[in-house]
Image (cartoon, rainbow, N blue to C red; front, top):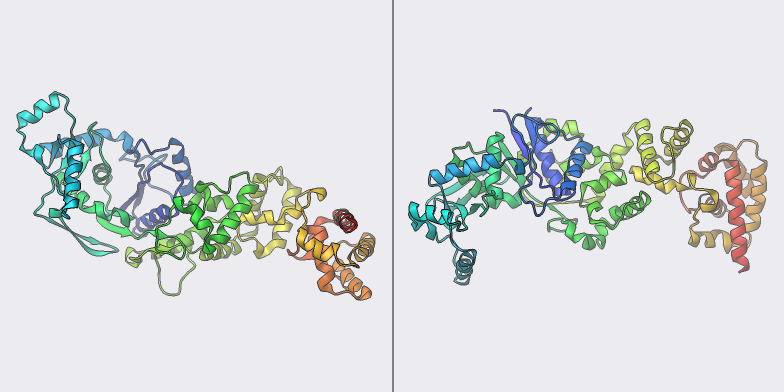
Length: 526
């Protein structure tokens, strides 16, 4: 048997991190078994679908390196791969069910159905369909249809049966058909509902394993019955637990972004997003680009390897020790029986930790390319292919070292890219280190003169000069260096000060010192 899995997103927005995790598990199971992974677009709900959403969904797969063997843009023998284009298959299957007596036309008014449901609830009884329309003769049904009376089509549930499935994750699960109402499988206009369309498609696409979110477990008995009624081979099932928000057991949702912003566990990710997204002209308050969505991680400069590593560890473990896994590792080692049954909580710290690991493994040229793309997107460079720009940025990337957790962190080194008169100073620390100390301005003025006269404006001579200057003036290094850093970079902390000064160059350092000294003098006078 060739393993065939599928992921079937509805084009209603950007990919949710939980949905992407489910897609990854499907992809891994197929690849682990040398099978096929199919991407199908479930776009039957026309009121919720967004045409512009398909692009971001496909982009998320491509960015993460999760290819598909059949589906949009790829094609395949079972196309089309959009449910909206497969109506003839559903019509044929529906006729088969009706002709075999496994489904029936229900002319009962929706208000009457709802009244029966409410009455059952009030009596604390399980609601099951009245099946009043089954009492109609074939002639009566034909007349009602000819007269244009509205009806839905329901699956006739064999109430004497029990459905037993062997779920790869949850084990044996039983469903009592006597407690099930007859589900609607086709609307009044003949269009299929989710369960029906899914079964028809899974059968026609020869899906062997349905790996999906646990919220679909309640749909499984209906789908098993539909497969049986249509004479299909029933696929194997694996229901994956949902992804929970950090520190809780509640399902993570983009509707709870305001709540997550107030969560200490999410703080680092939101701060990162606010810093980076605003730089590239994206609204950081957008729900579409929050840590709940895959697009967020791409935009702020995560690596696919970091995101995939975090995703696979959301509810799956190889053993008690292994944390770092490449995509090739995952393909070789992934099995469904290692998926946990309980909700898996997103851990932002681990997400950043995985990202930092894979960033540290990234070749220097690839790290440079990522930073160049980000800088151009943020308007700090004009041409990422310019040789001088590449040389400069390459030196800055080397200087930053492990400070670059994501590509967006390059914006924290904006002192190397902004004009001298646009350099923002950390005002609180500038006041503390430069404006308020009585000797700060005279010291910096004297130091400026010595810096101007130095022949080799490179890191080691600069280090030696500052050390001897501090000794001569009998000032603490811990007072002098921070004050100089603030004047030159605008920041109280950062990368190596002397390498930073070397990269900025003598002329730039002197201009910034003059500006900072002038600002300090004016603020002291006022």
